[in-house]
Length: 308
Image (cartoon, rainbow, N blue to C red; front, side, top):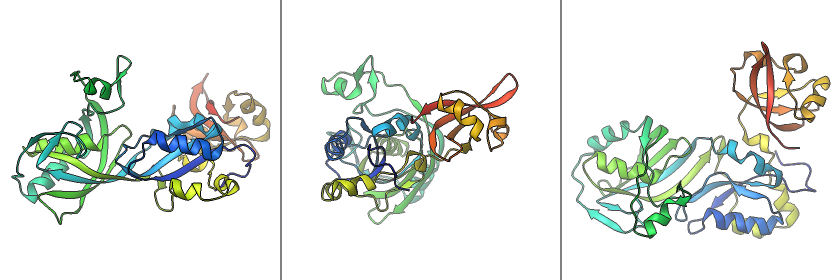
């Protein structure tokens, strides 16, 4: 639902990013359009990629790290016959080879990437080593040891094989931190072949879909009040359990204090320790994100990040 207090821009905006824009470009443009200093995106999209980019405006930026945990769904083109230094088709070709595998071979290979896997990010990425971004090493012609990282892929399927074996189109649902470029590169290697990522579109982040998300051009074309009306409340984007305080509990959480079971309308003792929750005052006003803990044998919600 839209934010109701438009005096101070604060909320989350779902953007349909066009290819050619960096995520930083989008944020810089929106900073001017909304007239705010505090603004940031919740997960980078490469310049060549398009699709859903979530942007937090104003105090909503306090919750960026909670959005970054969300699973994401992409549509990607997997191109066979080449490898590149960037792992996508915008990079310099480092090797070539004719595809020499069947569609059944490809299906078996994809199955091996579903679940919890280890993945090595591409060197052309914004991850850092010793305070320096990977791609800065790459541009200087330096090689570095890139450690593998655990990621999870819950869905990996072919949606269009019209151009097989030159390319196929995939749909991928994966955990935060997964590089689709690395996935495409690794699929090629698993087939004893060569592969790189072509087009990429992000379709969803958590429970937020690309459907209906405006472009930057569309936002620029409307009035400032209409831009404000596009902002959505932070808690509408968070899928955590909702915990409501009783009136007597408001004074505790208003000051960042602990909220115990006796001061809530919910059975928080049923939650596992460390479960993140959306925390509300008794008047149903969202206050922020909390975490369930057990203190001195009592179940409680400890505020983690507050909007106020």
